[in-house]
Image 1 (cartoon, rainbow, N blue to C red):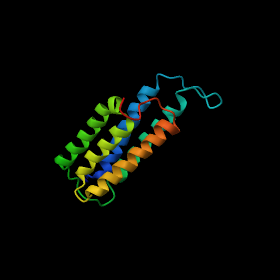
Image 2 (image 1 turned 90 degrees about the vertical axis):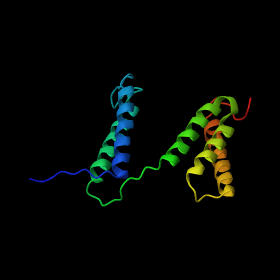
Image 3 (image 1 turned 60 degrees about the vertical axis):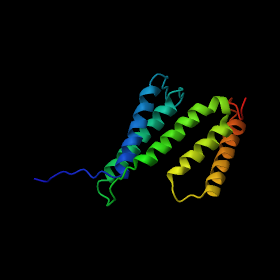
Image 4 (image 1 turned 90 degrees about the horizontal axis):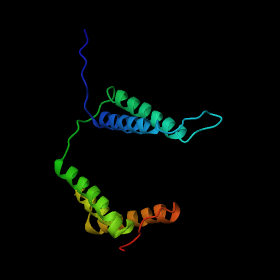
Length: 149
């Protein structure tokens, strides 16, 4: 009898995360009409993409068991820094605008990487904030404040 062991690694966690996100999207996509291939409804593409995400995640999770990999080491301090940056982004988006919220969020989350210097952090935050503003406000025309006010 063969002993079944589960390798806990990054690919397993990533695959399970993709399956979870895909299943969530699939479940919520069911509230829209699916339609047919000839006349696609509003739920067709989200349902198809979420099913594909589940299949890709399952493939990644299963294949992770056959590849050699390192163990997962969760560093609580870095995890808390990234969670704090996401919370700051959510709290700052409406009152401070996308540019400021993104800049602050990237600046805070960069503290999780000890190798980035301060000039590198400021440059990274500026570039990401600028690109996010260009893409979401100007490119996609989303209605959200760019700056304070």
